[in-house]
Picture 1 (tube, rainbow, N blue to C red):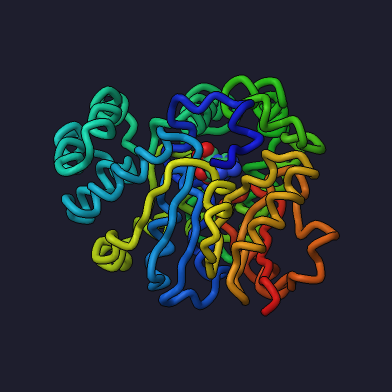
Picture 2: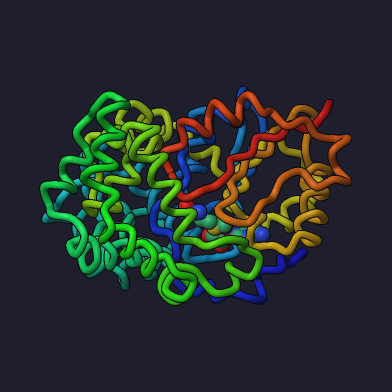
Length: 366
Ligand SMILES: C[S@@+](CC[C@H](N)C(=O)[O-])C[C@H]1O[C@@H](n2cnc3c(N)ncnc32)[C@H](O)[C@@H]1O
């Protein structure tokens, strides 16, 4: 089996992302028409692989190097099967709940023993934070929200972020009430490479990153607060308030619940690397590649990219994000790829997960 460069560098023994911090609305639009096709998705917490079921594919092959991340998907599948939508949102942490331990057991009813034991060991944390709040990344946000955010903003200011306003008023709110000197200082400390590396992301993930994370986050927060309406942004809401408000990530919305539930049997879980999938000789019609290219050196990226294109059917789309390290079709592959700039630009302007500096939609030439 093919191994992956990052496999040997970072420790994958716990949940890193307990929910998906990539916007499923832009992902599913970026993938285009995939009905009856084979899709491949990086698992992470599983939400976007599930969102891809709304595209009516024949199957979604889900890969991940981390067994803990695969366990997140298995829990969600049990939850869609055994919980109603309101219960699902309580279990994930989108909504407050006094019965998460019971909902967890109900969701785990038919899952394999390993997954059940994994989650039962986390039951205390799930009770407190919801199943979508127990990852290392969410813990990092929690520390930010509970210990640092109160140093910069009052509860009232934080609540006021989520009042829907026209663009000119958003700009005024952002400049006058939100982007204060204190806030900017806080961002500088919290998003320093040192703190992020220790608390949120493994140091190995910074090896190829260019620029300061804090400057980058400041630009993206402006995008989330001014260019887009924060009232529609579930990611921002969770970071600032620890739950979701009226807005939810796409696969958690009521309107998609039954569709996803009825297509769970189209999910095919393959623990292991994406590189392992592409070496099987199977072909896919679309790929959700998360931001995995950023975890690879440019040379490894170019090699892996080529193998993905080799494993693509004509017109297959490769959809992925960059956080801080630039990754786009490598020079040597430009003859086989069309960059869908119009689609990218339209979706980038709507991307609610504001961490990322770039969103890429590339199509394999037929
Ligand atoms: C790249 S991380 C990014 C997570 C993300 N930004 C989010 O919001 O969830 C997503 C997942 O990719 C997995 N991963 C990284 N490189 C991989 C590879 N080459 N093959 C399979 N999975 C990979 C990690 O284990 C992790 O669970």
